[in-house]
Image (tube, rainbow, N blue to C red; front, side, top):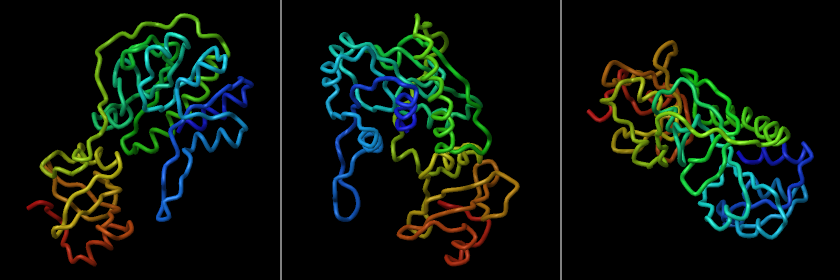
Length: 268
């Protein structure tokens, strides 16, 4: 997701002296090393790349731009090189690692993007610019993240082009967006259908059927035909599932093949 801002900065004429990205990772059955999407884009653009944040201090840069970096930037680097961060929430709500996911799970109707000053504290810096993004009743985490990138990328470019000025201190109640624990993705069918629906829209939600894991990729609270699953306050229509060891499929096809009758009481 950091690729669009990188390309936008280059297209806008900014001199990108160095791109810092994570180390190459082994992927696929062959275990071949593959670069991150950011590194791949940087190399395509002819930009130098490093895995070490400290190398940013050696290229004469005036400013660092942080997007979905996922690593702590040490105080000595921040003391030598000012940085701004493209953060996907309306700070001070949802500081931390998973602001998109936490906003969706909490049922927030609006979130946004902040271009903020990077400090030693966790997303505590002042805000240079912000833009709101609505969260629709059917919005998935992937779709929301893509929309935030689409809004945040031009916001970053415009903010840098106009000059940073002085950031506005954060105001309001502080909430923290802790990283999603895999255990949180297990569906608790005693919960209200709205909460389960939001968990499904997060991506990777799962339950068990006949002792085997069943991922639920799409669901609807009303208006679509699927497999009815009983919830704590009513029901939820399952539209797309993935049985353990198999590909995604329509929930109705899974139910027929597994001889599961609707409505389904998972965990009963």
